[in-house]
Length: 145
Image 1 (cartoon, rainbow, N blue to C red):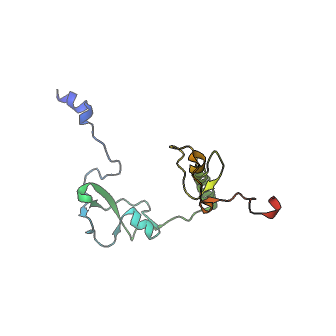
Image 2: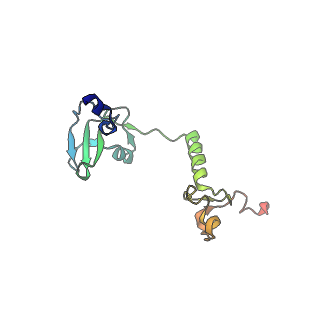
Image 3: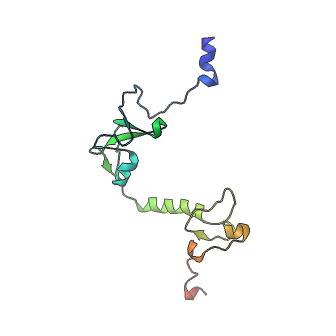
């Protein structure tokens, strides 16, 4: 009977692959972490990254409902600079999310392509603000007319 319970779906537990297997990381409450430790987001604000170091502590937020790893600021490394190739790849990815497939306008914000399938102007006729989308490359040139 015990073997059947271990394999039942209710007995299966999610496993955090990044968690310390021994559970030996100290847990600090919200805003009570010692100086010199920071979360990934806080490191990012300082233009740093963990740099391969393991977390040294955990901070508990929202009454234990949320947890975040803490890293030593002294061991953190600077973030890698954006290369031209990365910038081009990021622009291509964002262009897919910002371009309407119907009218081919590229907006400054991401479009609801999964739910609507196009921009609001193509979907229901709601006029788009002229400042909300990018002009076509030759649209503003006198030679293009």
